[in-house]
Image (cartoon, rainbow, N blue to C red; front, side, top):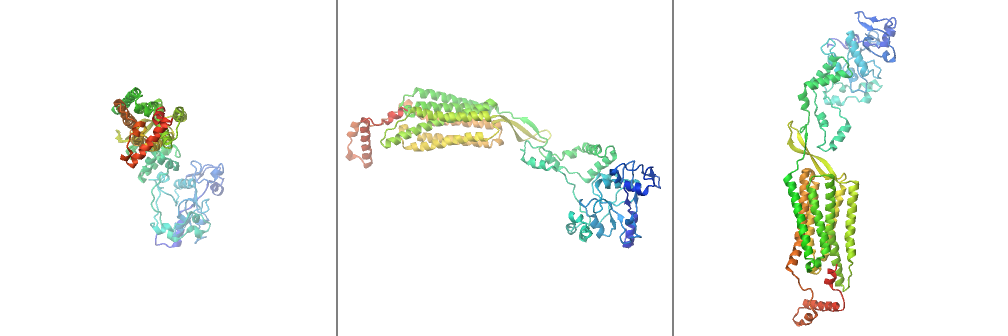
Length: 614
């Protein structure tokens, strides 16, 4: 194809050079004189057909080793004498469904060739093209192919007289690539549509070999926790194999020639991997390979938490003894010793829960700490709420000059009912989804000997579903809200029975410590599990101590000092007051005192006596 010959001579040259390949059945029927019943040799002495095809599958073959080695011959399409304007050389190209634009390129660039394959556009299947490769090489026939790189088929003939030679076409441009025919147009039966526009007849643009990755792997990997994530997906994404490296593997594949479709390619890839281990290691993502280590508990912190919790329990025990000792003092009588004992029992449970939080996680300790903490808060806050509500009821009745009757059994039943409901919830939790010792992996900044990050395995208490613990914390917050509202209502109650200020401080402290515990649990994934457990233990202990300091210490101090003030004035003292010297407010108070004294004499409500009987 030189420039000094005209288009007609160019057509003749192509038709004379590139002959059509013959199928095995066609060769035996049309060219062999005895239908291949005897071996057929060409003029060069090469064996072409050793036998006839045995079935329909062999009828259409262009090459079968040791049986049919292919044959190329001129057909009517190659006859330029009979068809000077339509004769063509033969082109081996794939079906129209493949991404190729050969027919359009040949048409518009004046390359007079076409295929004669079974496809509607004259294309051949992949296996047929490979058979024609082998037939052309065996018979030393010229052949024009459409193929791609990298591919092992090319390496098979590399360095031989049948080595492929690439044909250069006009360089690709953006306009040319945009003018390419679509797959539907390439497969059209209308030649004008099939050939497309002349602007799209340039050469192919360079492409980078793609890595096929299963879509399921891509979808599942982003949802996996970083510490559990396999480096496989990132490694596959990082792999970059050059054409030179692919050529090496293809040459080795071709050279084996033992099991070309199974063992040989695997062996070629494995040998390349063994010889290029450093290259493969460079594809491994940073922070890998990782190693694992078990968390070592910070013993000073753990023992400190246990010791602090034990001290709080001792303090609770001491306060319980003193409360019993001063139980008949006025300040204790107004505070109701029975309810104080319940509150101290709740603080004792919280102290035990603090110890269980600090010890190493186990199934028993995980279950026990939830029981002790939740029942502890219930025993601490529920009696206070019930008692203060009863006091509010009495004094509200007194303001209306009505007698109030409080049944102590109902008060105890109210406290017991709430404790029983909490116990039922804890029992359900324990039976359905008990808190258990579970492992958690945490990615650290420490590096192992290979430069990968160390994953620390930690053990903590948790259930499979997080809502159990959430409900427990919400319940505690609800108790605090109810206690706050009742304490607010109690603010105007007579001071001997008014715990509103101290109760407000206790609730404030409870809210702080409960909020801190919730924050620690929420952000616990960023801290060591043992540290989270120790902090939770310290917070529970602090909660116990602040309750003792705010609520019990002042009462015990008052009881020890025997600070008792007169609550009522006698009738004589009231009558001896000179009203002319009093202000209007004082007169109102004096009249109220007189009415109260009269009601007392008539058997009305004695507030101190009634409340002290609760």
